[in-house]
Amino acid sequence: MSTAEQSQSRPDRDGAAGAPIPTIDVDRTDPDYRSWLKEAVRKVQADANRTADTHLLRFPLPEEWGVDLYLKDESTHPTGSLKHRLARSLFLYGLCNGWIRPGKPVIESSSGSTAVSEAYFAKLVGVPFIAVMPATTSREKTRLIEFHGGTCHLVQDPRTVYEVSARLAAESGGHYMDQFTYAERATDWRGNNNIAESIYHQLRLERHPEPAWIVATAGTGGTSATIARYVHYMQYDTRVCVPDPENSCFFPGWLTGDPGTDCATASRIEGIGRPRMEPSFLPAAIDRMMRVPDAASVAAVRALETAIGRKAGGSTGTGLWSALKIVAEMRAEGRTGSVVTLLCDPGDRYLDKYYSDDWLAAQGLDIAPYARTIETFLTTGTWSD
Ligand SMILES: Cc1ncc(COP(=O)(O)O)c(C=O)c1O
Image 1 (cartoon, rainbow, N blue to C red):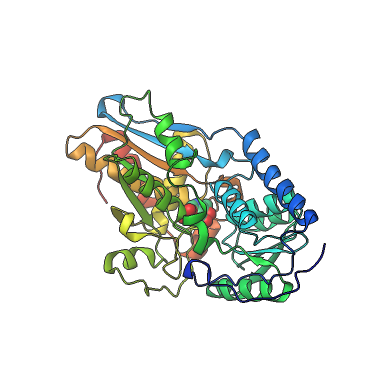
Image 2 (image 1 turned 60 degrees about the horizontal axis):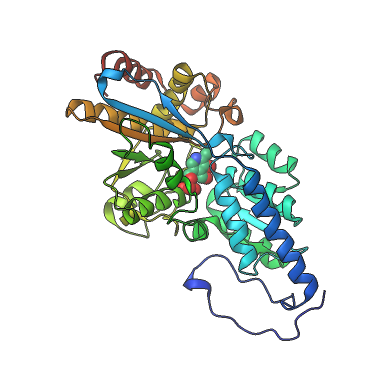
């Protein structure tokens, strides 16, 4: 494959900060490159074509309440989380933009789930993959990244993942995927079987087909942005709520509207809660935010197992706590309708965290009061916290 002779400066991509532009080291007209590109795109599309839609599960609530609660089970994607959708979109975006090139690594800053899915797609198209992640990332996620052929680069200070990723990309001539900038624009928010379109499609035969609320937690903010944009585009009356864990700047940043809001402490709920207002988080599209104590997230995810027999990750608990609270509000107001939240990833990735009483004790988290709130609500219909 020949190298392009001229190296010219190109305009900044959409004015986005963050990811550096890969150097022009590939002749884009080279037939070898073009056939590599076609083949890579075909493989990603073929993977999607082989993949079935994810289930919309019912969370059991008394029928007579008139409020139905659903969980969109994103843990059944081939790489086990809602990030499979994002990784596919980011790979297609990066390939079609000419940013992902043969033999050059893809680098990503991640709290783990995106990196697991991206390692899978990197292997599929045959490029090396490096995940830059906080050292606290669950061991199971690093194992999965390595299982898919990726390399893990762990950093002590989670706030440095962005700069370390950019540096590794510059040093290797690779592409920094930068999910935190590109998640919202790589996803087809108007439809194309995105998560929102799928939810509405699956609710068609339910007694309340247009949900009163959709609850989605935020890491990049991409999922909540896609859902909120789709709701507005389709002119639905659904409201979108983003619950945020303790250590995250999204909630205060949404309240004040200050894009410079930050947070010094790392989130304990893996995948969600960020130290800075990520470019893919679109506060103006979100109707409501809720601060959820970390102990409440853990209590909720354990209650999920009691209710439907499934373990899930901490972010699923954050969303479920918030969704149950909304159901309680609807009941108190005498309203009927449906509420949808997400089952983001499976609990077996976090057995040594959210399912470990030792971890809870080490973190100083007491889930008992929140567990009581949920249990009381599910048995009496009354919420008190
Ligand atoms: C387990 C988990 N839940 C929820 C999210 C939030 O998704 P998004 O990045 O679309 O905001 C993430 C993102 O990393 C995640 O890993």
